Image 1 (tube, one colour):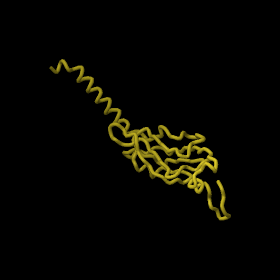
Image 2: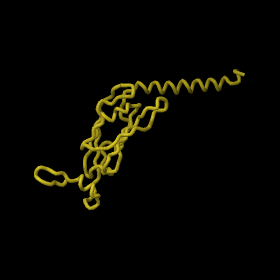
Image 3: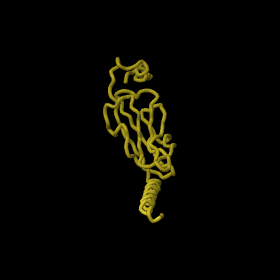
Image 4: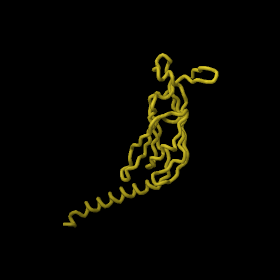
Length: 157
């Protein structure tokens, strides 16, 4: 009976070896940025856009402490796109608690990215610009964010 199933057993064994081999090799990759949204240098980004950073290998959820956004922006980080074998995230998503400021350059810096087992990658940064939204189309909350109070008085950005 085993002789009749030999091709199936060989195929199954090879599949398991390839699957485990790929999974194990991905553990030891240095983390690097595979994709960002917005793309580096992109203009006219909608202020409601979430910032997404996808890595080439699973990363630690402590990555949220290694991502810096300028100008400083409050919000939350979530993790998605889990690896098949180890169920660790490859994508970090930042959702701003308020819309991003219109007509503004944002710089995202990732300092010392680390894989989920601690392998260190290279620092990375990218920039994008949000689109201009006319003052009369902004909500009162957005208008308030667009105004900075300086020592000299009120200054519009």
